Length: 491
Image 1 (cartoon, rainbow, N blue to C red):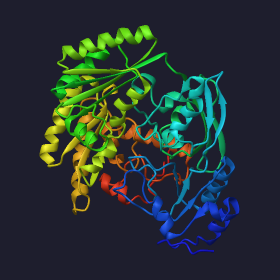
Image 2 (tube, rainbow, N blue to C red):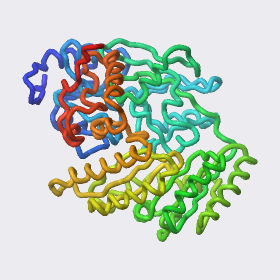
Image 3 (cartoon, helix red, strand yellow):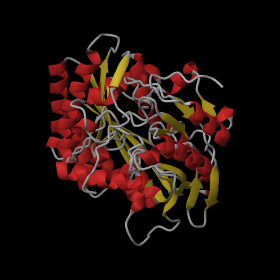
Image 4 (cartoon, rainbow, N blue to C red):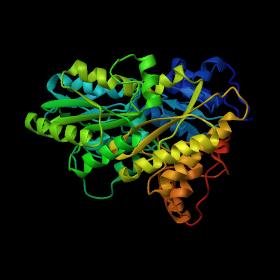
C-alpha cells in the first residue's frame, strides 16, 4: 500500500483500503506525481492537489465512495473532463476528487421519444454523433464540446453558440439519477418533459457539485432542421455590429446562434487557425446562424442581410454547405485557444448584459482595459448578451494575477450595474463567489444555503464553492477550507 502524501493529520489508511475494496487499486490514484494532473480545472491560475482521486464506473460505486467520505468526514469534489473555467472542480485541501471520466457510456437511445440516457463522463459531442445518422442532434454546444463532459455541463449549466434559440443545458435535461452528499441514490425529474411538483431537476442543474453528483442524465434531443445557413458580416466598428444584434432580435428573428468577435480576436484566430474567412481589418464580425424550413431560412436571410447593410456591414458571406459552415465557425470555436499564441496567460470572465447595453458595456470594458493596463479581447454570444472578455497577462510576473482579478471583478460589477449577471454558463465556482453579494441580498444567499443544506447537510460536497466567505475572490480560490460551510441554525 502506497503512503498518501498529505499535509493533514488524518489517517488515510482505512479510507484507502475501503476505496480499494470498492474500486480496485486501478480505480484509486494516490501517487503525488499522478495527483498533479488533477490539481486544477480549466482555470489554471489556482491549484490545489487532492489527497486522493477515485475513478468510479457505476452509480453504486459513486454512492459507496461518498458513504465512505460521509463516515470519515472527508470533503469530496466531483470532476468531469476538467474543462470548467470558474474553478468549480478545483480540489480543496485533503479532499477526495471523484472523477467521472470512466462513466462514459450512452445507456439508452430512444429516438421515438427524442431522448438519450447517458453517464456523466460522456463527451458532449458524442451525443450528437450517436443520433445524427437518424437526423437528430443535441443542442447545447459549448466551444469545448469535443472534450467537455455532460456531467460537467450539468454541473455548470453550460450553454454554447445555440443557447440563444434553444436554451442552455437545463432546458435539455429531462431527468437525473443523483447521489447526494450522504450517499443516497435519488431520481429527479423523469423521462417525460413535464412533471408535477417542485422542479428539483432545475435546482440540481447548475448547482456545481454542491448538492451531489449526477450519475445518469436523461437528455432531450432535437430533430435536425431542414436548412441551416451561416452568415458572416464584417463591420468597421464594434458599435455598428452591436446595433445589428439588437436590430435582428427587435425584428422578431431568433437565429440559432449569433456570435461577435472584435479585431483583436479576429487576428489572433487567423494567426492560429488560418481560415482566411475573417477580414483582418474589420473592427468586428458577426456570425449569424439561421435554421428552420427552407422558406423560413431564405426569408430571414434576406431580412438579416438588409439589417446588416443598414448598419454599415462591408461584406456578407453566406454558407449552406456543411463544410463551408464548419469553416466559418472554426475560428470562433478556437478563439480561446488562439489567445495562447499572443499571450502567456489569459483570464476569462463570463458576464451577461442586456443586449441593448452592448455598445455601452464594450466601451466601458475598453476604458477599464486602459485604466488597468491590460489588453482585453472580446468574444461573446452576442444574441443573448453573454460576454467572454479575455484579459491577457503574464502569470510569471509577481502580482499580475491579483491585478487581473481586479479588472475581471470590475467587468463583472459593470455587468450587474447595467442589469446583467456575473455568469451565463461558466458557473461561479471558486473564482466569482465573492461577487455573489453584488447580485443577491443576504436573505437570498441564506435561502440558497438552506437548499444546499437539504442535499449536503455536512457541507462535504464541493465545500467553499459558489457562496462567499473570504474577503476577496483570490483568497476564495486559493484558500478554500474544507469546513468553509456556515451552519444554518434556523434550518
